[in-house]
Length: 420
Ligand code: FES
Ligand SMILES: [Fe+2]
Image (cartoon, rainbow, N blue to C red):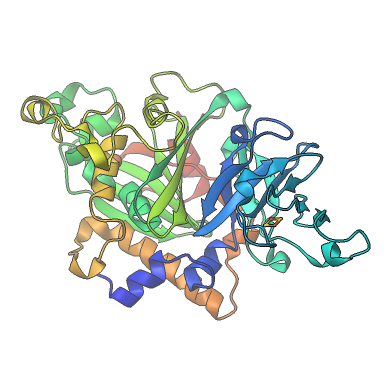
């Protein structure tokens, strides 16, 4: 349970809030590179952390991310002309480059130097791993771009999906690090019966023991989360995932060797941008391994909103619920079942009414760790991970281990169990 004040502290990332300040110490994925397909392509509306912005790619291929509102009389630059290394407001013709400098002001006399005094908010951008990243914090606190394995693999070895969850980003992250739900929410009515012949460790053991024990340790990147379930008489099944500052999760995928990163970052306080990245370090993920990514790409054309959504009750089929699956929400990956739970809690949960149990250990730890980082920043203590890119070079995994072996956070052991 959180008090209203604690909940607001955790969930509110608007300009000037403590959590908003913490988020702005990290690089934010603004949009996919492919959304700005070439020089002088169409400008794109992007809302990040409650700020309405416009992204554009200039004549030289450089990406700009500027305030939506023209500093002259506040017209929207979405309608701007993207021309000759700048975005020109169509109202009176003021033109801005990717750095936010006003480079032309045809509505003022030629001898005026007013143009040199006007700037528009512009955030620095870099492109890496098919994503345009923006830094929205103070210039003298510039972060390092997190160094994750998927950024270094050939493009064909990673697959990316982007969509929107219509709820606060903390709800989205909590849904991700809560592994306990998989044995219920994502199950079929015969999952337990078929467990003995399942080909994945999750399929074999997560239905047998629905009350995983959680072991959470704080790391430089965030949290390492071990969920332990009964396996055979002499062994446990360990499912090992991570939460990484400030809005990433890494959960294991089977067969091990592919890993999936979730990026759950605020569009505003009531909507979350979701980017999922699946990769294999040596080869392209197979179609079977990519099912979740493909399912997440099933969107309303021209939008980032899933076809299965709040407005159609996620296409629940009560007949299927009676006879085949636990939820009756059709899915090829669990995605629609997850968002049905996240979004129908309300856009921003009132956490005074919740009752957390032992299965919520990782969620409680994430809230505490993130809150502490924001409080530390208020005291002048900068977040370590923001300027230490290599702490992000980790994976998730799973293994069946003898009962007397504790899942380890020792790097070598973890490498052993994360690589197929
Ligand atoms: S409002 Fe943009 S140039 Fe006047
Ligand atoms: Fe799920």
